[in-house]
Length: 422
Image (cartoon, rainbow, N blue to C red):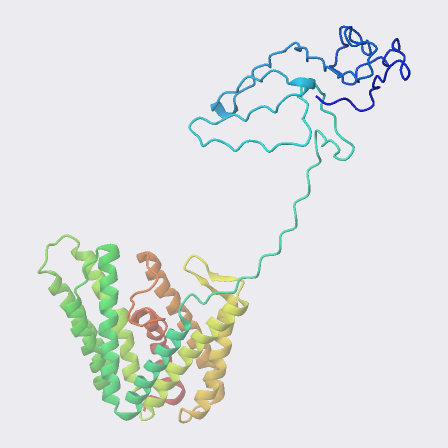
């Protein structure tokens, strides 16, 4: 070990007093005095002018206090015993516990100065890093940003619905003003498809087997009879259709007979018989304009209810039947239908008056809303959303006939009252 700086070097009798003693006290805390005393000349070299080398004292073993066993973290690994202290009272950092079966951890990075063991030096907070309080105050939660307002959803593909509606309108208007018989055929086809959707859903959801063949044949015949023989022909065709349903069902087992024929008679009245009034409106001289007025008022009523209810609707109209309908939507349907009725009766119908159109629009809005609620009641009882999937954005044919069917007899009757049947 090199000579400790600051220690006096013996230079002989002329420079140093042989009896002088080194200042008391070791330079290090664990240094012990030399057995012969610091500064005592070597017996063989006393009086010489050479400097005496300093023989450092050997470190004395310190009493070793074995560490107390520490609790094992999470039941993995074991703690290694602490090694004895090294020279000058320093301790090596404790080895990190190795988890059972885990990868070995990297050795700790060396520090500039040895860190005293927690048992030797009390843990006192330094001035640069104040101690954390025992019970810190809870920090207030950071304010969350307000959620963005969600847009109301229309619930259907609006683009597909508009496209299909425009296509159907073109077909109806073309057949209505070109040849009346072609439009009667369009009505018959819609009736047959509607009967198929209704009977199919009844069988799937309720196990009701209403006979489709007599319903389809009788429904088409009912529409033609109404166009040819007016109301008498429609009633006769209705009676014959009901009788055909009763007879057709007799070819099957008697279980559920009353249930099936009741559903068949209901379907015959609900779809083809109500559609017959559209064919009867067509028989008048201005029949195409009456049918067009009927279609316009029904579509405008549905559109006004949808637009106003979607934008301003907050009060439910019939939440147990149709949660989407609101009182505001009903007000929109009445307002739109009355304005459209006044315009149609004034400019499209012969001998019509605007005030008649107001009453007609009010009646159409009421009947269309009731028809929509009645169809919703049927679908809710069956546990379905749509009657079919034939029309993209609309559902099935019956989903478009729900407000048209009950409105047809209302418009036919008011037209007869206001301007006559001819």
